[in-house]
Length: 50
View 1 (cartoon, one colour):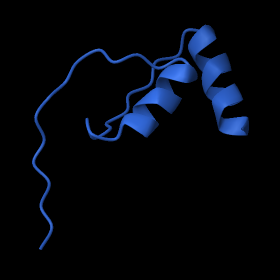
View 2 (cartoon, helix red, strand yellow; view 1 turned 90 degrees about the vertical axis):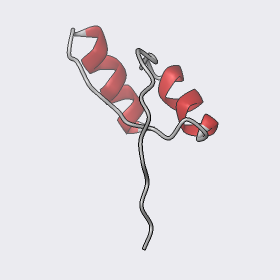
View 3 (cartoon, rainbow, N blue to C red; view 1 turned 45 degrees about the horizontal axis):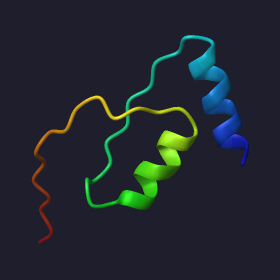
View 4 (cartoon, rainbow, N blue to C red; view 1 turned 30 degrees about the vertical axis):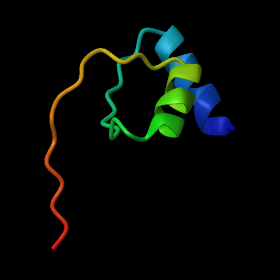
């Protein structure tokens, strides 16, 4: 996947990125961690669906 290579290279070059992922989206968290992201904190979020 091209985006994972770009992300990996950017992180290795010292770039910083921020993601917000729902805590129950374990698949996404696993993928992001695999390409170099780290879970630094967890914060409560409120989702509104009208």
